[in-house]
Amino acid sequence: MHSLSERVKVLRLEMGLKQSDVATAIGVRHTMISMLESSQRSPSFEVLTALADFFDVSLDYLCGRSDNPHSHKEGVDNA
Image (cartoon, rainbow, N blue to C red; front, side, top):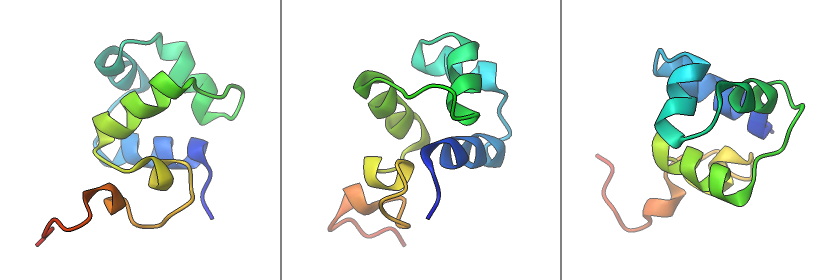
């Protein structure tokens, strides 16, 4: 199962973004994203939800509890 730090980094890289891009988008310092990706810091609930919203994934996916990134969109046709 993937960790939060791995998921954030993979999602960021898939979008072709720098850590500073993600930080600016969610209103935190780029060092927060760096520390989060290296497992040196855990995010607050507010940062966690901002990341999930920014990457358009569920909290369960972001935290490694699910492999379905869009489980928060139950009943929505993703086709």
